[in-house]
Image 1 (tube, protein in one colour):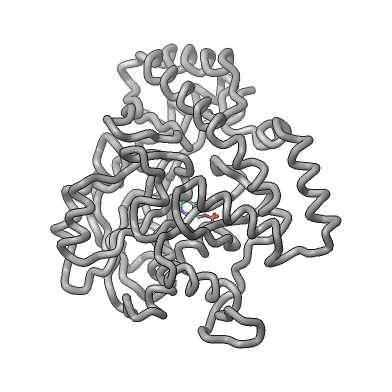
Image 2: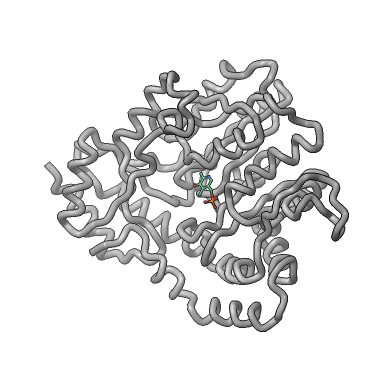
Length: 367
Ligand SMILES: *Cc1c(COP(=O)(O)O)cnc(C)c1O
């Protein structure tokens, strides 16, 4: 059986190094707000090219805290609008609504699956304060037009970089393209912890300080609370693991790129539409390799019958979720078609050439 993602195998690649770091953190007797987190934050900031990185409890909190900080700083107010992609994981939108901000959905580009930048301006109103871009599936979405639009309307660009650590646009890493970015280190992400973990990067010192305080009960100084904050700290054990795994991230992303290239060159079944390879200036990190098929469910069954595990990212669009019934009236036909037709193939640093070839053979045999 070819697993969609073999987390045990992925972590066992670095067993000795990870176990040594865990043991060190355990034996230190210091489990929160210590040196492991400090070290990981410094290394993450350096890797992304940003001046600030803040470890937090998970990816959703990373995004929530960015908006919460902008509200504390008076840059946004409850009721303000945030442009969000209609095609994304629900966490991107939860971060907006949790702060009593209003998400305004914009359809994706049919080919890239990411927000269609040419459709953003029509969605901007006097209440719009930010554009959230999500580098979905590890695919970079950014452009000069987007920067110009944000400048013209005085909008913050917030990146949901949960799926795209290591990706680049014009030689700059995602997470350093907008005003602030949220990262998830959920175990299955390209840089995965052994539990929940997340981070924020930014070049804005005031924002960074506010987020750091908000994530620690609204306190920058012990028992002095400036804001009504949350408890959203990254712990020392997770930080130690992440700091160690960061060394291997580029090599693992390179392997993902090799697999994506192989799929794109060798899957030739006319019933299947492939993921577009990156345009000039973009380096994707292929968190997920998505194909489209009109008969998606039958194709998924065919793969399962041949021992290949696949997943659907995502089966139900956000505006059709019960949690967001207030958006049920929206018509977002591109988003809806994508949710009906996408299928995610196995892709990971531990997938062998032979397994990748088997996936291709089985896909090409689908009639
Ligand atoms: C995983 C993910 C998140 C949330 O991260 P958690 O660590 O699970 O809270 C947010 N946005 C996107 C696009 C994600 O894939």
